[in-house]
Amino acid sequence: RNEIKDIKNMLSSVVVTEPQNLNDNVASSTALKLRQSGFSPKVIKKLEKSFFGKDYETGRVSFLRSLAQTLIPFDIESLKEKQIFYIIGSSGSGRTTLAAKLAALLADNKSNSIILSEFQNGTGVMSEHLRGFARLLNLKTAIIEKDKAPISEVNSQKTIIDVSLDLAQSIESIKVSRKIYGHKNVCVILTLPGGSSSKLIEMLNKSSENLEPLIALSKLDECEIGPEEFSKLSELDSKIGIITGTNDLVGSIALSSENVLTQYLKENC
Image 1 (cartoon, rainbow, N blue to C red):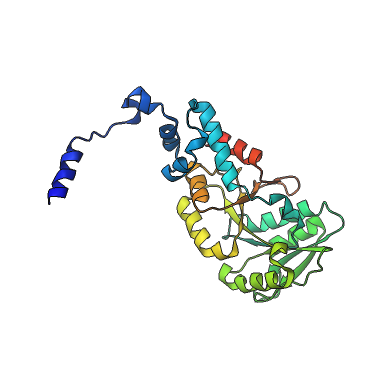
Image 2 (image 1 turned 60 degrees about the horizontal axis):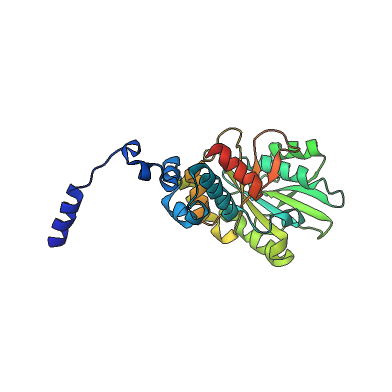
């Protein structure tokens, strides 16, 4: 009771006010302004050395660059060397379009044949959407049993799989592929469309954390991803490998880098 009484006494002297009514020293602090922008206190605290002692604009850019560094996979340049790509994500997230865009990117290397694949959906027929992309890009197609690995010729073929089934139904195939072809040759990419909430990000991370997916930010020309969502990705130690919009198959996909991601953060956060 005494402790509760002490707390009540302390709270009685607390005044809730708008940020603009704070004194100049507090209101102008970089940490406060970053919080007002939507970045989480946890991320700001973790990266406070990046802006400490700097004016706001310089500190903000330094903070965003440090945030970008935490989100970039250290081996992003090896992405094109992978042999098998599983594209996972919810319906409407741009998953199938990303599979086609990735195929167009990898097709630049003439020494490898590209196969667009999809899991067996019970009909034995590939979705018309994916078949349309394959015809447009002049690529071979294949259907894969949900609990089996694709047949792939290492070093001469790359297989891109649109995971149209529920993720739980494809986990066994991913495990088998990694066992057969090696962990380093199999890549799982999770499509995260612009406008995704931090709660959705947390849910997707929980359902796929054992797969260690690379994040592909998709549909960014339709809706942006902001400070709250980038904070959540950083807190979950997620890695962003691909940035893309909705339209154009060729030349519309960018492999993430410190400069590319920092620029996006500067323009949208």
